[in-house]
Image (cartoon, rainbow, N blue to C red; front, side, top):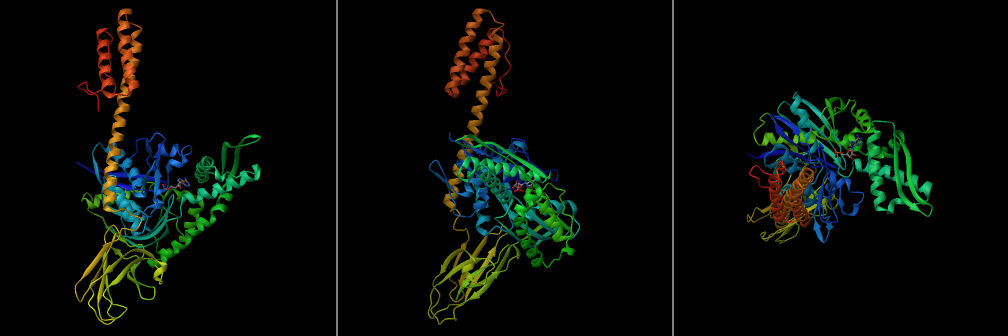
Length: 583
Ligand code: AMP
């Protein structure tokens, strides 16, 4: 049987959960962590690292380590490494592959289906890119859902009584605020607002700026051009920030950060919480506008809110919590770990989709208005923001010039009246319109948004029934062929990873057997010792050759030799019951 997982694919950390006995359970990764850093690195020897291992070596391998890739999803950013070019989707797929492998290891079953979360403010292109990343990782993405919705699901499912709640989600790289309407069996998102370029990374950056200034003042040296020093500063800044959530001051100590004629230079300074609050007050302040906007859009006043949920690691910052308290007049809830509730909600949603859970229905909304460009740079909205999904809306347009036989449909997303001030998601041309005076032809434009928030647009000349349509994939996104190629490459990588693991296991077993032989040797007669030395020598040379069949046969020889000499042999680790070793 294959299992379903819920994935919070975060900017800085990701988390995965599955359903066990009707409850969402967070799956620890292979390293024992409950969240996995969303970091991918390529070592100089070509090995690919994902998660904590990638994060740990980021200082020394800064130029070959990719972080915060989520910020580039749906854009045309490309990552170059060893002559190969990767899209943000492909890098994200490497993170998803690790989460999938860790989940399979933990559950002991194959995982194929997934629900993946995205920030509520993610555009269509970013959602599509996330879905593609899942596909590349070998996952059947059942649904893309908004992170705040998912978090509310984790809370809502456990509580259940009707109410309006606010989800304030400040993660590593994104900020979302949503107003939701929870009843006993539905969760409706009334409004969402946010900023997908605001998060914990920006708080770290403020501390980095502060540390650079301190160092410049004392040493008259600018560290900002030294990538290794910058990576160390970034790590120290995050550590200090986390410390400041629990204590009122943090010490930053970075020995040997630089060198001048006088010898090595060190950075040692103390940052107080009040100074940190001062440095980052504009960031906390920047979350205010979207909070007020979301409440206004939802027609909700602070007194109508029954709960405020805090989601995302950055909501542990005391100044953030006190701002939320001030704005809403409520003590924010943090019963479920803010780093885990999004993944838990995603897997609960998966439970609903696969019929394991029957009591929940989830209604999502479109985060931005959609429409087309019309004459005079005017944006004609066809679907207003915060419309529940899935939805389909049509509007009839006409031609602007006499005898015009084709029109260009420019699909736009945004809130501005001026068409050019909004984001163009794509363009297509409807041809074959019957020749007529301007204003006579009737062109029906239909927008359809599916439950994942993915947009499909069609235009039809009602006179001829001629029709054209597109599914918006975004300019920075990948074609079907590119995705297929990436899927194949990801499978090859997974195969390489499996081989590497099997090779390590075999080498470990050989090493274990050699140790047993060295121990046993002392108790043997001298003629047996020389026989054993020969067998040990062949296994040692087989191990250094790394040739699998040589290692296997030398191991068998050595085992036989030990048995013949009367030295008991423990089955070497990694050996199967039938005496074979895993390939
Ligand atoms: P998330 O995307 O929800 O995993 O949040 C990650 C962000 O939360 C990163 O910027 C972390 O540095 C930040 N973070 C995690 N724990 C804390 C903490 N105790 N205090 C402040 N920020 C934190």
